[in-house]
Image (tube, rainbow, N blue to C red):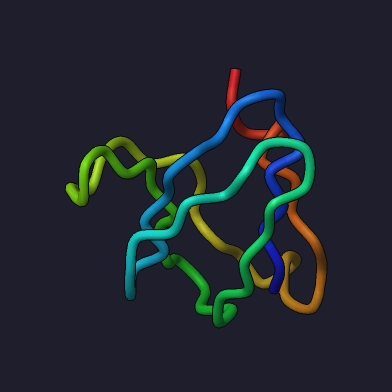
Length: 70
């Protein structure tokens, strides 16, 4: 699955396997679609709060971070 940063700010996330910076306005990364896997915020290389958990309906799709970040 693909995660896209469609917000107006750069965001650092932890994908379960590594820390990734997603630039604002379209930065993206691909992750394996494992049901229950947590996608979290990342702060200076440390895992932060959970943004969302992957579920089977997300597999093969593009997920926009704005849908989960308030």
